[in-house]
Image (cartoon, rainbow, N blue to C red; front, side, top):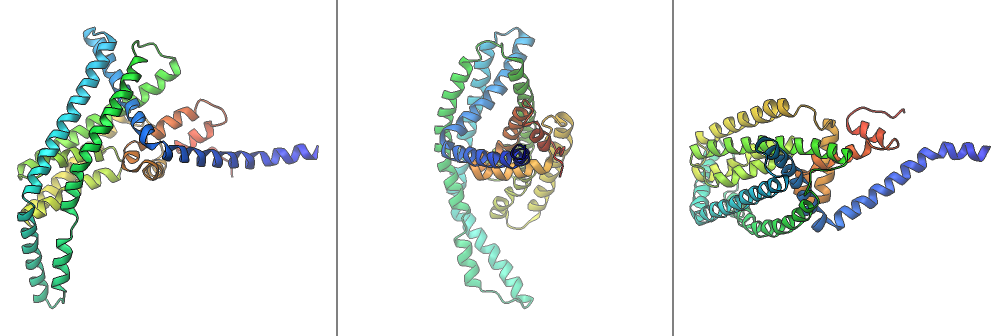
Length: 339
């Protein structure tokens, strides 16, 4: 009797220890299989979006479901390759004018240092000039160009995974449970892609109005960063400022672009996205932030981009079992545990 009572008291502790061990093992697997698992997850989300678009085409124009899948993915590939092409051209144009931008940066620093000396501020001019010469922005742009080769390679692997996933989606027949999860995730992804496209489009318009170098690349960067909650839009807002500073120095264009981009992200993120998406993922904001850090540590930048849909998928899986349902409520911000 005493042994049974002791085991019952220790059962929660054992469960917590098992969960910690399972979580540690899962993290090790995620890190070790990153090169293959991450493209597969991306391909899985792409197939969900393509499936949603295929159903729309089937319903509106009576298009065969399989043909709708193929056309949706072909459109994705065309957009991705076009973006890679235009980014490469933008980088080439920016790097070709690197000498001019470096001279402009030195002139701006000379102006700032001379004004600092007028107000009695003692500065080490040589140190500032050497630091400016070592600024990594040009190396970053060049390395970003090198990343395009890696992106194309991953696109090939993602395409292969998508083809195999499509072979399992030749018909629209799915178990109700899988269909429910896919419907909720695809709804989030479609809305997120659309609002990210809006943010990128208006960012490109703002930057093009002041003839910003790398305007297209910065717009694509805005599209990508918009998938990172909270932090991404902020980075996308300030990322054009160094480029504008190198082009024009510290003039009115920096202030105008900063104000307009802040307005764009406020309207798109806080008004349109909130209105269209509502609380479809049912995730607590603090949980989203914690999961953002977790997935960024596990899969880097791509993990941060996929943090919300991955966490939402895990939450939906937790909801299926009585033992893990309290964890699903915890992710939603409803604390089920009694202290």
